[in-house]
Amino acid sequence: MKRKRLLLTLGCLASALLTGYITLRLTAPRHSITEENVDSIRKGMKGSEVEALLGTRAGVFSSRGPTGSYWLGEQWNSGWTLIRDRGGNEWVADSVAVWVRFDETGCVAQFLKGNVWAKHASTPLLTKLRHWLGM
Image (cartoon, one colour):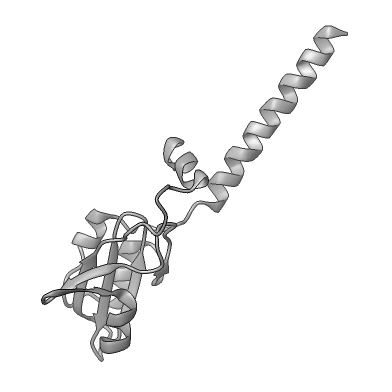
C-alpha cells in the first residue's frame, strides 16, 4: 500500500513538472532578436531579410518595457517617437531593441540599435524560470 502511494505521488509530481516545463516552453517568445543579429543589420537589406534575421515581424517581445530608447543626436528618443516622426518599424526584446526605417523599395534606409529600460525593478518569475531552464 505504501509503495503504491509513493509511486502515485512521484507520478503526479513528475506530471506536474513536465506540464510546467511544456507550458513554459510553449509560451516562450519565438524570435531571434539578439545583440548579434541586430548588429548584422545593414543598409540595403530587404525587409524580408531583416524579418528572417530577427525571426519575426516587428513587435514587442519584451517583459521589460513597451519600446526601446535610442540615442539620436543629443537626446534619447523612444521608438514611438521615431516611428511617429520618421516612420519605420521596431523590434523590442528583453536585451536589445532596434528601430528600422525602410525606403520606398522596401530596403533598410536607416536603423538604430537601442536599449530596453526595465519598467519594473524586478524580472518577472516566468522570465527568470525560462532563463534558468535555458529557454
